[in-house]
Length: 386
Image (cartoon, rainbow, N blue to C red; front, top):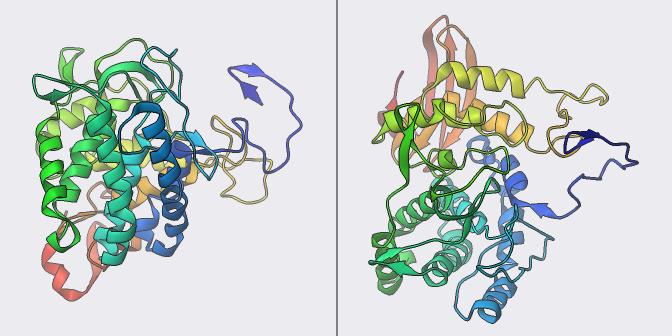
């Protein structure tokens, strides 16, 4: 294996991972996002239960360490959770000053509710998790001129101890929007007032220029990159502030095309983000590359070739499947976008799930839709054809 670019011999079992046996949220999440469109909702619940089970202890540690309410999930911890005390003067590192996972899990839970309409889940699981994360951000960081200043915080694992990282600002915007849109019978006036106050305190997403083009930045203030990620594109995915049918699509597209890291394997989200901004060529190229990465030593085709960890790579399949689904169908709110990033010369037959307990089956051949079945039929009026 290669570790930090150096060939190293290790004796490892099939269960071994180069980074150790703890749960790494950034890697674990990749297999769960595509379960929404595949309809494997029951398989998502153990993930939600595992992280919700960490809340009580993590909230106690936040109170002991920092003297305020709320909680977050560490990027890497055992299944029972736990947090390290991280002060503003602590040395920077990949997983220090990194609070974003609770926002992404909240976003995934919001989607789960949108797809299933399960109000019991929303009340008993989504609300406690999202409320804990929003409270943490609200109380942990200071304000200047009425605006939240998220500092120091990592922009995922790539930019360390920055000010106002884009993933966190985008995540807060996305989660707050989703929480405020919940049915009023699930929330209280006090909760909604607090969420609205926090939303009003969020600074704008950082924007700058690259190669003479206006682009999203990874943070308001940042130093050199330390890892191979594009944090600014978290505003496209997993926090879908930008995309087809949304404002400032040109900004999203130029930010994607000018991204620093361009890769088609492992944890990289290029194909997903390409599909969401309608870059058909980049999305198709990514999916073909990602879903062809069979490890030659392994018997099964979905034992993916090593990316950054070990064989089988645990991110590759999830990200590849997610990108493929989003090429075929993008559904949010009432809108169901059919074949939004699919090559016109490629035939396909698929059946995928959408919000509001909807399924969409489509046969596309020779440049035409030959079959389209939307269930329930009343949702047919929400389909946006290519």
